Image (tube, rainbow, N blue to C red; front, side, top):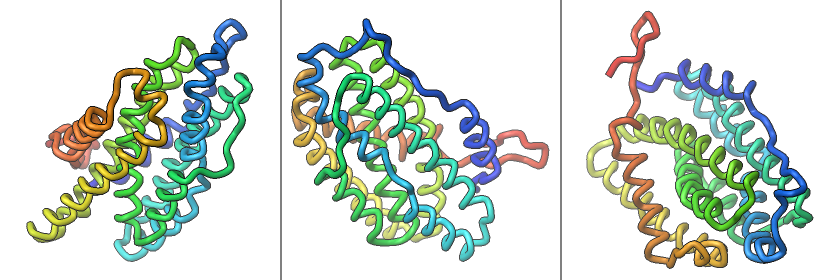
Length: 249
């Protein structure tokens, strides 16, 4: 059972706690670091920057069809957090003289994929991007000496962990209504999407990833490890609450 009220309460509380970190003058990126990470950071900032209209529209249609009145509100709050990520990266980039991007071929791929089907497919693409982003932000924190950027990356990973739990519980609930063979086919397609997407991201961000010791195989391996943790771990599975509001197994 998916607890919509729990996630509505969670994202509502988190929305009031969103803050922006700004680097001090003595914590700006060095010229070498700028050359290494500027283009990669700009691409990820663009990927975080979305009005979320497609996802919100899918959620509204899905909510009407399944009678889930809380879903559009939860989705809107979720999108707000993603937009906060984009704003946080933008502020850091502007402080360090890094030019913002208006388009990127990898970002365009993910945006097209999210628009191809309905709500479940859009969430699948989104959770895939967040799994890869979790690994990327950990790598980015190791690729810089900036205290501010390291703190931003830690904050991003903490946020992604919450987002991944929400998305995993949602997908597991949706997939649980299908037959065993259908679920197996969906999960296999999801793993293939993850692997292909991770290789694309590696190629586009290899200057950062290679600097911290990644190669294609090890980057894909770590992305797959996040997939297993998120989609197969008991702690990420949906839990119901009783009438008193206590979480039960």
